[in-house]
Amino acid sequence: MYRSTGTLSSWQMTHRNSSIVGRGSVRSWRHCLDVAGVREAAAHADYFATERYLRRRSFNLWGTVRGLAPPESQPHLIATAAFLRYTDDLCDRGPMQERAWRFEEWAGHVRKALDTGSSRHRLLRAYLHSADLLNLPRTWLDSYVEGTRFDLDFPGFAQEADYQRYVDEVALPSGMVVFGPVPRLVAEQDFVSSCRLFADGGQRADFLSDLFEDLRDGRLFLPISDLDRHGVTRTDLTEGRDTSGVRALISSTARSARASLDEAERILGEIPPDHRPFLRFFLCLFHKRLDDVGTRGPALIRSPYHDGRMASLRVIVRSRREGASTRAHPVRRERTLRQLRRYPR
Image 1 (cartoon, rainbow, N blue to C red):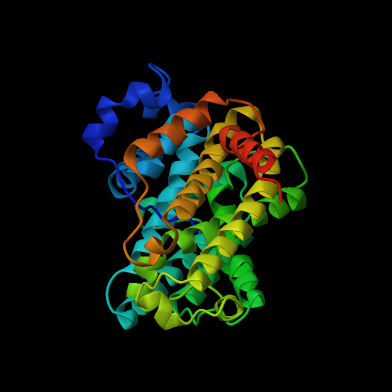
Image 2 (spheres, helix red, strand yellow; image 1 turned 45 degrees about the vertical axis):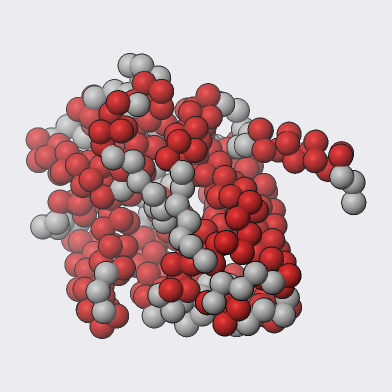
């Protein structure tokens, strides 16, 4: 669900640290471990290794956690994100048969670790420690592993119902694992309902922004029924044709994504105020990608899309500045309202 497109070097982030999160606002990793309840020396070593791994492998996500999440949640969010990143890496590289073999070996190792509560793998040990401290349910992790297996042999979507099944089996479990360490202020079923809206809108936004690279790899994540409705063929997309149907297809998909993300904004009121900047970042990032989709139009299928470095930094700054607000993207919302007043339907 949360693909990282575009990265910042550690040099850049280090030298821009004060503009991202404010001077003195990032606590030491050791302090975060202490306030998170991670005190054993062996566990410290696992979390230090996990933090280094995520910083190296997914710097933007690492920086978002370190800059926006409260200190007591950072180790658990880092452990969760590192586990997911490692799992995704196993499935994203090499021939399909090799990827499937690696995944099955890893899935067996994960299953055994969850059954026994122990593992020889540091990233998995850190996750197990966080799951134990926070009493995280195993259900969503099991669902995530099964969803990853389904995604590995992705058959494509014939109808919207097939896409919705993908959200239920792949995107939602992934989101629930990512946000597992975040406390709730509402009943769990209400949070899950909001997270599903989040997953739906975010997944559509990702599919649009990754359209060129997915088509290049022989994968199409838009329902065939949507292509048919707009008179678009797969060849139109693979050959980068700028037609009215292609434009309508992209616009319609973006509107669906935007509608789900707008509804998902309620999730900010369902979590404690000090966790809202972290979740707000993802909502704002998806909205930014949809803004870019609207600007690029059919150019999405002719060249790869990457999050702009300075634009991503501005999203982090805005997410932090809004603090405890339950609004996700007030600048975009106000601009949209002005446009609707100027150009009524």
